[in-house]
Image 1 (tube, rainbow, N blue to C red):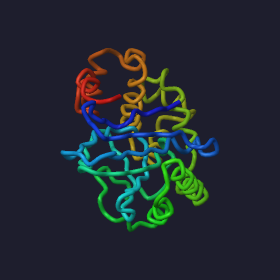
Image 2 (cartoon, one colour):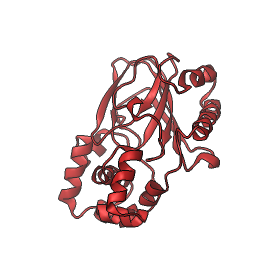
Image 3 (cartoon, helix red, strand yellow):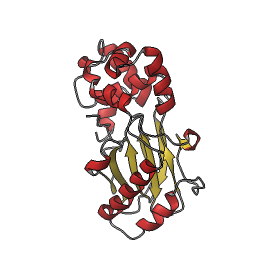
Image 4 (cartoon, rainbow, N blue to C red):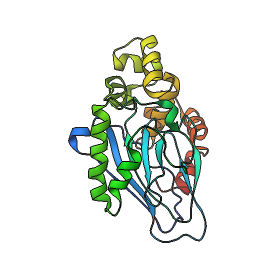
Length: 246
């Protein structure tokens, strides 16, 4: 099962709470988790979230200003997001390849503007006002089902097969074999459904897998692992694990 690591929250951070919950079974092939990130007290200094790529697309909602919402997804490099001294966000993290919506709506930056797209994100946020996180999950699950009915999202058998065979995948050819398609077909399918080339997709998901198992099962050697880790996260593995709560 693909289980991307949460974004970087420094170990020294106080009064910042992150929670993630698995979705209902009927949408588990679409959604990795529902999540909540919030302050439980006003911070003395601005909080910076160290977001790292995972090939997922997130729909996020600002629970302090309910007109602010959006669709987010990183490319192949980390992004540092300044969330300020007080914040409350909830969101839906879709599995890689599931998002079929307008890719022009996907942002890799901090989202602080009112949402003006066609998706019912503001209406969904209005329905979540005053609810606890458990009840918000019910509203977000209903949104997922609506987006699935509209074909804005759909299960992706190609990326699902790749993610289930990551332990045996070292090359793009391995990915193509796991998915049961040719390398050329893989190029087209991944670019269309994820925005990634096969090489970049493998680079991101393999690094995510390395957070939960020994790197030597996924990389040719330690030097290769460290180079890939630093290029994506901005830190060496030892620096990252020392600084952030993983």
